[in-house]
Amino acid sequence: MASNILIQSQAQISSFEMVERKGIGHPDTICDCIAEEVSVALSKYYIAQFGSILHHNVDKALLIGGSSQTAYKGGKILAPIEIILAGRASNEVKGKKIPVNEIAEEAAKNWLKKNIRFLDADKNINMITKIRKGSNDLVDLFKRFKEGQIPLANDSSFGVAYYPYSLLQKTVLDIELLLNNKSVKQKFPFIGEDIKVMGVNALTGIYYTIAIAIIDRFIANIDDYQHKITTIKNFISTSFKIEPQFIEINTADNYQTESIYLTVSGTSAEAGDDGEVGRGNRINGLITPYRPMSLEAVAGKNPISHIGKIYNHFAFDLSKSIVESHFADEAQVYIVSQIGKPITQPQFLHIKLQNQSANNTQIEKLAKEKLAETPKLWEKLISAETPFEVFKV
Image (cartoon, rainbow, N blue to C red; front, side):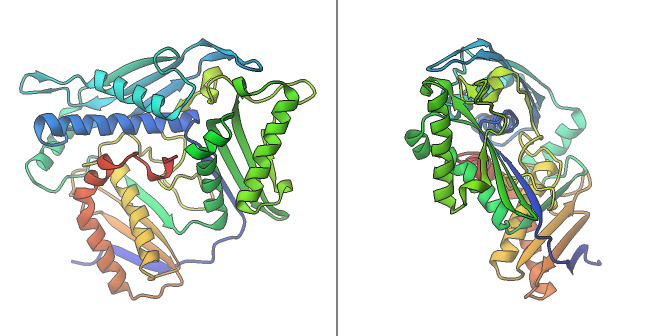
């Protein structure tokens, strides 16, 4: 049989770049994280009760922003945030009902309580769960995994990833992770969890535009707000050795009219900003229009047979392994499935390399080893402290 793995060189990457990172409190990221938490919670329940993960895809979540009244030294939430959780999941086994929607709501609220400090998940969230039973054909595909077979792809889809990060990408990622680090929150409690970092490498330099939801209870007046914004800028500048003039924070602020980015809870979701699964960071934690990326929503898909999740994780892991094995300076991985085929047998796997130092046989061997590991990927995904490593704070 002819090999379906293609390896080739690629042109030098452009030095110009735009990179975005939506932090853990951004409405889109909240939806991603909650959807994945629901999948993990269901997976653990299925294993505990039935010995294996049952069919589910809970990758549909919509956040509808509430309303709030901010004020110096503390405002209030006027209308709750609504979160709609939807998808498909096995809800009955041999007459035994599975409390799918109850599990989903508890998992979602627990995540919010753990990660958004000043948002009362019981009082300020209206959770609506609409998770229904899965279609018979996909459930049948899933059953074969339980019987010990290699899982069959439940979709014709693809995964895309690259490695390593560029300096700009790594810095954008690290700025958000630092600002949402628990020790930094203790030092600067006025920094909310809703942080978005946009990095641009342009003709005249590298610029960072950062939106930070400031928590109003810690702000006394407009002068105090300005002082705290300057404090954050200096902290970032010192931490990353970036000149202050290349950092701008909350650029929509108008100090004269005191129209500033204040929040009660630390997330813009409290006052009209909405969110949805799949609109945020890709599998590597970034949005990178200058680099290959999939539009697939990874969060909430089952970790056994849904290629939209498995192949994106695979692509990132393989590209990273190629580089860390010193087989190339950079790797891009593209992989596509056919529904109903074993997940270890993609229709096509394309590997693009820059400054390749290993022969194709070595790289193909590594790729096949990684493919053989995909049926066990679920163990890593449901045992992680958080679903996406890059979301850790």
